[in-house]
Length: 140
Image (cartoon, rainbow, N blue to C red; front, top):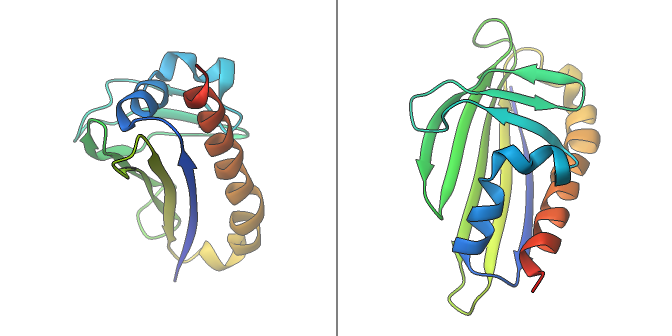
């Protein structure tokens, strides 16, 4: 069983500016309402430590492309129980605007039990983070 949570927001700023704010992980506690911290060297193949409200996990970074995307995969205890592949994607619309997509595919046998939680609490966390990122990027 799998379940997708997808959000998208248009930001009136270049991908470079959005990326600089998004990847300033040390500043997350100051502005990010959803992801409280990201620790470690964020690079393809590395494990990092991520803290969101009420949960800590250690996903592996699958892809890290400057100004384009960050993709990681987290696993709850054992693969196939409750896994999440989280994608942060920046799309340059070519007019000084960036489309910021935050998506996650959850898979595993426990997904049906958490579907409502994922579609409400997790999705609203993504939206809150996207909105704050937009505010910061559109300043000045």
